[in-house]
Each structure stands twice: as structure tokens, then as C-alpha cells.
Length: 177
Image 1 (cartoon, rainbow, N blue to C red):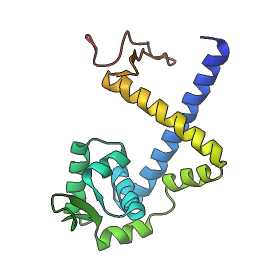
Image 2: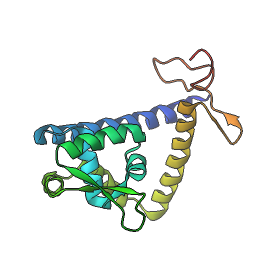
Image 3: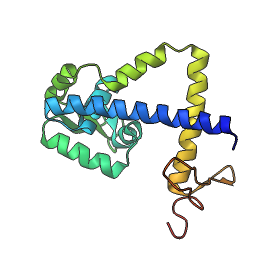
């Protein structure tokens, strides 16, 4: 790998870590003042923005496993923040919706990290957003493949060297991991 490529990768990793760290910090700060957890704040703001969602869609939007989100929703139901209800169009589908208390909290939650990031993205040109979206989708697919130990387009993902972390011999899930 050339010195320029390593420098590019290092700066991109730093930017991703910065965005992740700042959004988590902001969400945790808001959550703490309201007596909630970060994931509860994210769920409340997501349901406020998107409306009622089924568990699979909510899990996908939160980038979490269904089993994790099921526990999260269970706690939020017990706390009176959300409720489950059957979809009128398809009674097999259960939707998660904010309660009145959940809606009140959603309105009380100040501008979130997600809204700050959305504002920054709106400042980009349309072509820049589309390019970034395509790159992030490709990057997400590769990270997902690495974590799940699968191949993308017939090419197995190899370990990536990050300062202080040794490269893996193969994808996670491989023998010896």
C-alpha cells in the first residue's frame, strides 16, 4: 500500500470515528438528562420522524438485530414510551408506535446528533450526496461481509490493518477466530 493510500485510509477512519463518537456522546448526554438510554432516544426520534414501524424495519433503521430491538421495545413498552399494535392492512404485522408520553418526550428532545448530521448532509451538493451514499453502501457491505465472514462478489475480505490492531488471516468466523 502506498503512503498516500495509507494516509487517505487513516484520515477516513479518523473521520468515521469522530462522527460515531460525537453522535454517541450527544445522544448519551440527551438521554441522561431525560432518564433514558441512548438507544431509547434514537428509537423515539426515529419513530417521531418516520411514524409507526414494524420491528424488522425499526431494527434495520437502528442497525441492530431484531432480538436486541425486541428487548429495547419491551422496556419502552413497560415505561409507557411506545406500544405495539396490529397493522390494519395486514393483521400479521405488529407496528411499534409512540404513546402520548413518547411523543411528548420526542418533542422535548433537542436537536439530535442525527439531525445535525442530516443538516450537514443537506449542505452537500446532490452529486456529492449520491456519491457519498454509494461509497457508504459499498463500505457498509464490505464491513458487514467482514463481520459476518462472507464473500462479496466472489472476493473474500481480508483483514485491515488499523494502528494497534493486527490484521486477521481471514474473515471473522473463520477457523481459529
